Each structure stands twice: as C-alpha cells, then as structure tokens.
Image 1: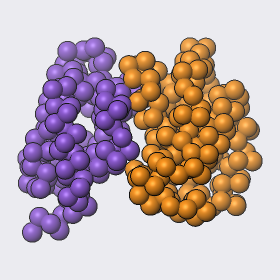
Image 2: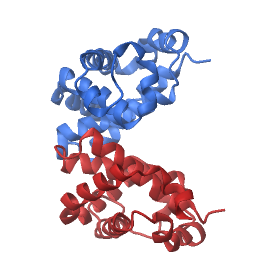
Image 3: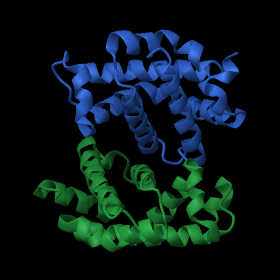
Amino acid sequence: NSKKKADMSLNGKDKSVVKSFWDKIAPKAGELGGEALGRMLVVYPQTKTYFSHWADLSPDSAQVKKHGAIIMGAVGDAVGKIDDLAGCLSSLSELHAFKLRVDPANFRILAHNIILVMAMYFPAEFTPEVHVSVDKFLQNIALALSERYR
Amino acid sequence: MVKWTDKERSTVASVWEKIDIDEIGPQALARILIVYPWTERYFGTFGDIFTATAVLNNDKVAAHGKVVMKALDKAVKNIDNIRGTYADLSRLHYETLRVDPDTFKLLADCITITVACKLKSALSPQVQATWQKFLSAVVDAMSSQYE
C-alpha cells in the first residue's frame, strides 16, 4: 500500500500546487537544473567530491549544465507520477544507493539550490504557499531516493 | 573567528544595499511561518498566524520581521565580531525566548530565498556563497550562548 510510505505527507493541495507551478516553469526546467547544480558545486564545495571525474566543475561547464538538466528531467517525471514517488524513483534510488553511493544528506542541499533558483527565475510565482508545497515535494523525492539505501 | 576577504566584505555590503529592510523583513518572517509552520510556537501573542493568508496580512508578523532585519543590519556593520555583537541576543533567545537554534538555520534559508526573489540574477553563485557564509556566521553567533 503506497499510502503508507513517504508520500503520505503530500496532500491533494500540495500535489495540485506543485503540478501547476511545474507547468509554468517546465520550459525553463533544464536551465534551472543546470543553474542549481552549478550553484551547489560552488556554494557547497564538499559536493564536488562526487564529480571528480569531470574536468570542469564551474557553473559554466557544459557537463554541469547537461547533468543539471538531466536531474531536473527526473524531477519533472516525478511531478507526473506524484501519486507514486517510491515506484517512480525506485531505480534511481538503487543507482544512488549502490552505484553512486551519495550521502542522502546531499539531497537536502541540492533541494535548497533548486528552490533558490526557482525563486530567482520566478519570484512572482514562487510565493510562500508554492514554496512550502515544493519544499515538501522535494523532501518526499529525497525520501523516495533514500528508500534503497539500507 | 570568521575571516573575511575584502571581496567578501564588499559582496555582503552590496547585497545589503540592494535590499529594503522594511520589505524583506516581513517577507522572510512570513515565509518561515508558512514553510515551517512549527515555528508558530514562538509567536503565541501574534494572533492568527495559522494560515498563509493570515500570516501575510498580520501586522505583528510584519513589524517583527523589521525588528529581525534591523538586528541583521548590526551584523553587517560589525562583520568582524558578529559573535560579540550577538552575545546578548543569543542569551535572550536561549534563556528567555527558549528558541530551538535549528530555527535560526530555517530563518537564514528563508532570508536567502526572499533575497533571491529580489536580487534574481544579481545573486550569482559566488555572491550566494558569500551571503550564505555570512548568514552561517550569524546562525553560529545566535547559537553561541546556548549551553
């Protein structure tokens, strides 16, 4: 019963707020993702330890921008499957748990930067009410991503 | 003691110049009450702060937001000794107000998001890094008298 898992805390209002905000930002989602990842690497340098295989970790780096867009694509998929985040993110959870072995504390750090970039690009739309639902949504994604860890 | 380069000092000053205390303060305090509603516990005398609409229209929230920003102004102007500047304030929040120090981190994040809404692309990654370093020093100083 998926209702017993993390997404219990997302109520109907949160889901509709997230979906409607996502509709507004979808055309810019890739760019937002690149910005968020670029910022995270600058502002939280400890996160660079997961990307030592890339030559250029600056916000302008093509690899950083591309990877940020991929991450945001996955967030967009999750918006579409918001009623079953655990199912939607199951294989990504395995990837992060067993192959990438990213400390789940970093999900909160990336979420902060995603939220910040949303506020920068869409200040009028990113009201406190949208902020709280998006924050809960990203927290639920983090929980779903952590499912497979131990 | 937190060390600041000249560039960091001027970055913090330039962010601070761009914001209006009377505008940002109320917005940041409203955001923490809406996004992290358990913080309502500290504002029992403020009346209705239990819905987003109520928070956004509450005069006491707005007034208190300005008080908080004025205090942050002291930190900007005493950046080399934020700890000393905030010792009494820290003691007040611990002994009298009994505020969980994790709350300071949440408010710092809400201030940053509010500033991001205002500054937009002027908040470059480097500026964000310096601004967050400044707010971390403020959070540390606010937690310093808790024991």
